[in-house]
Image 1 (cartoon, rainbow, N blue to C red):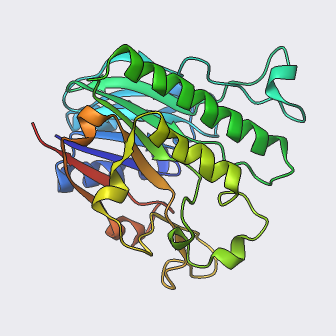
Image 2: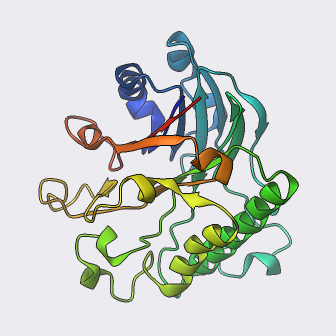
Length: 271
């Protein structure tokens, strides 16, 4: 099975391009992030015509996640257990009605439990969104540890845009991020905690090279200058990690008209 993740930065603007990617690469399951549309606005027919089923959650023109599969979609969940909401201007647990954003969607596809994840950005270290980001990651770690406790042989892939730069070499110039989010010790510790929960970050195992990026800003010729970041990852359960035979970053999808600012990360799984 071929599984991929891609922050498409508006699925309505790039539906045809995404379908072309699916057909070109023979991808069976694609987790996408930043669909930027409500459920009723998602271009289901475009993907169904290409032979794919779709599960999507989106509430507005922001966020939004989906799983697209030609090997079936079952047991869809629009958020994970304990997923926190965002309460603007305060800690989420102090607000009786925080906003639960469309940032996580789980579905079972071909026997693999796929979670399409769009981790909160954090915005700035003194912003409530930063505390929300850390709380969100901790809640996901707790939930995912529970999945393995319930079934150590579970086939689970947590894929998506993690909005964390785990290593200094995962960004074009770490000095440009002094005092900024994505590289702070609490964020990096929250990211690495999934390893402590029993998962393996398989894209690093198969693509350890430095300066291997998955995101380039649209501004200041970032892509031609290769001023990028590596922020799209896959944490796999042990049973699934053992099935991964190859990982590729499809840099070609950052080229040409109408490209997203992210590119797909592709995993090949043995039967």
